[in-house]
Structures are given as structure tokens and as C-alpha cells.
Image 1 (spheres, helix red, strand yellow):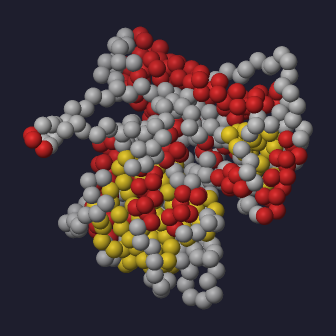
Image 2 (cartoon, one colour):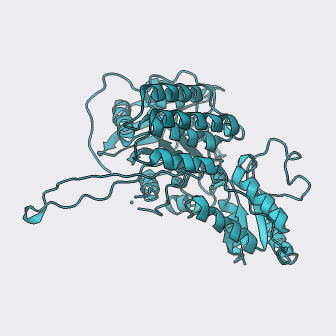
Image 3 (cartoon, one colour):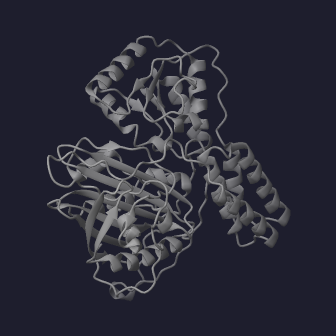
Length: 506
């Protein structure tokens, strides 16, 4: 019998430390990682809740905003399951949540003591488990089931009449009114609107109505959960000398130049994986959307003997609620950078801004991951952005991002434009001045480029080899972006992007 973990998919990286602690104690943990969606998906979750001995809640603001998590918790309470709340992320108010009356284990900064408390609590609660009630309570409904139904209709290649199209628009607008405060639902609805607009049989009236709704969504984004990121590197406390501080973007845009600079020097040289093929149900923080993709690709390639060779299968089109699944876990990154104590920040679902100024503003895209001023006007539709750091025994900084576009062509166009901007910075020294006046100077190396990827190394002046590899790669309709920083960095960023690309369904 397992421990059931209920968590928001937006907190996947934050629950990694809880999983590690329980697995070290040889506890069996079940969490929704590999399932697709729909009725079978929801039935499996409910079955696992009925079969668990302890129901662990990964408590955070994201979890409290998730309809799926709320339904899971209510069902566990109705079944009389022992509940163990473990805080993994920030909360607006600890006293205002459905578990406020219970003792909560704070696991935001894991320690030996909190690990012992976690395992001891699981053991104590397991001893209090009792048989299921008879009769069983009524099963909760599938969260956002209407989005699945609408997605099936919109994805169906069968013709839609003008009236059917306008009915779909009306239902999606009603969904925004009902569930617009849920970030995942809001983005899934935006994706469905985009799919409807891009149908070959879309009417002018439908397209106009959809574009008006999408424009309103862009103009009034939902605030991301949790406090705004304070990018800007808490540098390690070296005994003497300057401190490493890769220029990571915080809030308050200031002085970052044009996202796509004009004429630049001609280019440099070149350089350069299938994963769990998750079903096309969009499950993000409780929101669910199914996308049925029908792709016909015919490519003739000359092979031995002149016979055409079949092309490899194209990567599946990714959806907004799949972006977090492409991020690496702390353990996956630790195996690349050679430490075992990375501390992950919460995954952000918005672009970053910065109050720092650059001596070469056009190098902002080469300096920063997922910067709003760089991606502005590119047409991106979703983002997942996360920072992980280790202070000792050596300072390691990793910023991993996934940026989704409506199409693979748009993602490729962004990489092409970025390549020119990055190349223009090659060989330059760029000084980043923080808001408090602290300044750091970085030397940019030449850009390595392939058809799908650009990469560039930078070193920090006066830090005896501390530097970063910044990598940007196209994978289906997503951009995978990594800045990996440590002493004597080599191909860390490329290896991380390889591992992220391996998670893209085919």
C-alpha cells in the first residue's frame, strides 16, 4: 500500500525533495506522472486514493488553486484517509486553507530534522489507517471535463457549421468566466481558441470573435502564483574577491534593448532524444484538454539503391499544460553538474523582467533566459521557467525554461533571429549593472549553431573560470532554453537540453 501524493503539476520540481526523502526510507509513493487524461485517468487516480494508506498533500498556493487537487483532497477526507500536509511552496495565508487546523511539515528547505519528521509522520499515520467506508462516497467528477469535450470537437477534422463554431466560442468564453482564475484552465481555453481559429473551415465571424477574446487574454494576464522571482543571483560567500552573479532577470523592465536587433556581422560555425509519450490530454494544475493530432508527412530521401527511406516520425505538437513536463528534475540536473544539493525555486509560468542595465542592451537575449522584452512580439503562448542553485561546496546556477509557440515554424523563426543577436555579442565584454549599483562583466564567446540549436559560453571577469553555457533549441513547437553556470563549465547546458528534448512526445 502506497503513500498517495496530491500535488499541482506546476510544483513538480518542488516535490522532488519530498520524494527523495520518502524513497530513501523505502516508502512506496504514488503520484500522477505518466497518466494521460480523461475518464480512465481520473478513475485510476480515485482507485489509488482508495488504496493508499496515507494521503500526502504537497501544500502550496498552486495546489490550493488546482481543482483536481481540491477534488482529490475532498474524496480522501470523505474516505477517512489519514491526511499529511507537507508545505513545498509559498502560501498567501497559512491560516486560510482547508488544512489550516492540521500540523503542517515545512519542507521548503529540507533538512535532516524535517526529513525525520516526514518519515515519522508517515509511519504514525499509517498506523491509524482503517478500512474504507461502506458504502463508498460518491466519486468526484472529472475536473474541467467540458474542456475535454470541446477539444474533441475542435480537433475533429469533420466540418463545423458557422453556428457550431459560434457555439464553441460561446462555451469557451463561458469557461473563461467560470474558470478564468485558474491559470491552467485559462491557458487551455486559449489553446482551444487558437485551434478553432486555425481550422481550415473557420468563418470570418468566428475568427474575428476568437481573435478579440485572445487579444483580451493577452492584455489581461492572470497573475502568477507566489511572489515574483527575485532573479539576480544570491552569490556564494567567497572569502575575498568578486562574487559570481550570472545576470538573471527580476522584475521591473529597465533598459533592455530591442528583441531583434538589425544588421549584425555574419555568422560563426556550427555545433549541436523520445520520451514518455504522454497522451494528448492537457492536464495542468487540474485543467484538461485532449488534442487529437492527425499529421501526414511524406518525405522522399535518397537511400542506398535509390529507394526512398521513410522519414522519422514528427514530434507531437505540444500543448500549454505539457510545458512543465519537459523541465528536468533536481536529480537529473545534479547528475550533470556534479552536485547533490541543488535547491529548486518554484516553476514560474510567466516571462521574467529585469531592473538591471546592460552596457550592450541588444545582448539581453544572450544574457537572460525567458526575458519578456526579448520574447515580446514573438507570438509565444506559454512558458515554464525555473532556477536551481547550490551554494556549497561550489556555486552552481541553472536556469531552465520551456517556451511554447503555436507552431514549430514560429519557434524556429525565433531561434533564427536569436542566433543573429547572440552572434553580434560574440567577442564582446558586457557589463551588467544591478539596481544597487553592483556591476559584473561577462565575456561572450562565439556562437555554435545548427539547424535547431544555438549555444554560447560566457565567462565572468575576475572569477577564475566561473562561467555559463547558454543553449536555445527548437523541439516541436517549443523552445528549450538553459543557462548552466559553474566553475569551468563545459557542455552542461547542451546535455540538459538533450535530456529535456528526450521528454518531447513523438
